Image (cartoon, rainbow over all chains, first blue to last red; front, top):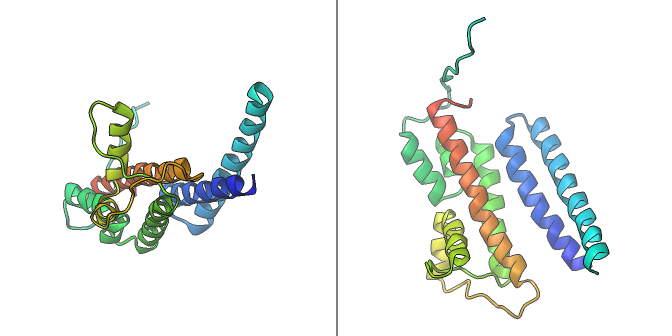
Length: 57
Length: 136
């Protein structure tokens, strides 16, 4: 469980970094967007995981 | 009220290279397109993150997919991986990416490899937009 979560967080961090840097030029805006994307991906995946457990677990 | 028109904004950091050359550079080496446009910080982030993602994917036992027309998903995966030009080439020449199917991280590895290529496709598109002045 911890390994799966860590790998997902690593992936989310990479995707968030790319999008943050891609969309904005100012470092502050880049970090803000990256944090929001990272949070969205992690929380979203966690919720979807629980929904899948409820449906199929 | 006049309709808004999109006027290309000349970029002070624009490179003298053609947009297609910049895109080719961005495809072959992640971040190279932005580097040639004078956006060094962005270039470094793209290079480190994308090559890192690709390397981790290989370390997880991910597979470098071949172009196989009989299997459309494999074909698409191969196309996505090849968007990361040089790292994909080096990995293939170095004999990496055989794919360790029994490893628990095999699918994670594939995801990392494919996502690295797809993210670089977005980077290449950004280089093109910057080169033609659509973005500043």
